[in-house]
Image (tube, rainbow, N blue to C red):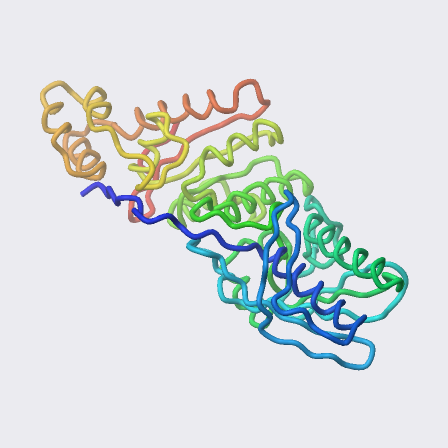
Length: 356
């Protein structure tokens, strides 16, 4: 059956980015370093002016340093970092504010990301947030804002194995992310962010052909088909629009979209979010592609797979027609961008059943 999950009826609870948690931990640690006391809860101002409050999960005051930890609450978003402890260790070191990757926080090793290779994976907006909190406290207490901020996430390297960081050349752990400080439930902003960064890395490393896939089966099929390196593989998931719109303004010479018959059918019908809860297969549309004598049977089908198997049993090349329509959708989104595009439809056992 086609999945038609209803959206949750209750209002979904928003959460906080790793960048917001790291900023709150940094503020608490530096305040303790200056005053001897940890604020708890600790309040910060987010980039758009909102105020957020965080309870401390740990605090430690030592000789020349202080540590504070915040347990990340991602709200109702399915975020792999939900429940992780974000720890800031602030030490009186050097001149100005510098950053260091502690346990579980990655290091940049490839060009194309917002930070240079060798830098800790603490993104620019979270850095700005932390610097501002440190400078505000330093000004209030008339002390120099000369500190090293080390961010760590115990278990972060294991959690990072569930993310794109390895492909992006971020090694050793997670990234400290967030441009607003807020995680909006089911926005999947982290996934789309990873798609964008994957394209950035591909461009910076000279990759001329990228492939966005809806899942691991289609990814493996397209990798073998074109003998693509790992840097060229974009885990697009359901976010075809998020990838294609970014490519429109950040082009690579060629893109392949690979996925199963149902997902590519939705793309062919004009959907850019291919999630089962946000777009559905239109069986009337599919019926118009089929021979006349099976159109009514197609309209009454329970799944796209049922239609594909019906066409296959007749020797009718429906996947090629769907792929051709999907290529048209892709071209409409890319507009005049200098990007050559093709579509690959992959069956459940990994065989390629349609191309355009």
